[in-house]
Image 1: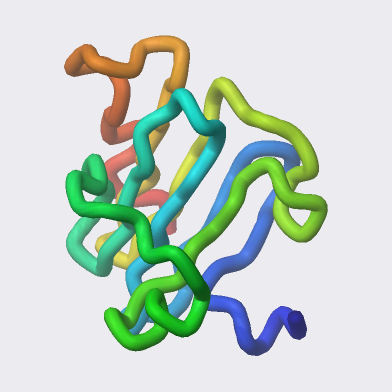
Image 2: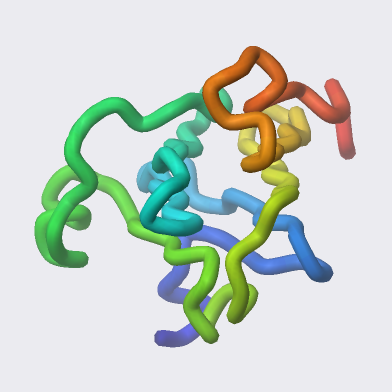
Length: 111
């Protein structure tokens, strides 16, 4: 897939930049890790069922991002930074899943 078609950019070794406010990103790291949704309002746990295909995700105005795929990072990540459209950078620490420290605001204004 072309970089112009994606709703995100990969920056560095563990940073994803959300760039399209019309599409939400569903981040899938590993089978044991909970999915996370990145919207134009921020980052939170994705409590619904993950769409089974890209076509189903597009119908719901979402894009599925598999962190461990070769298109993104190529490996499962423990620590991930997300730059959202609300000018905040979030830190997702998969070693602390199930706690309040799982999704945290890392920087209030990164611009």
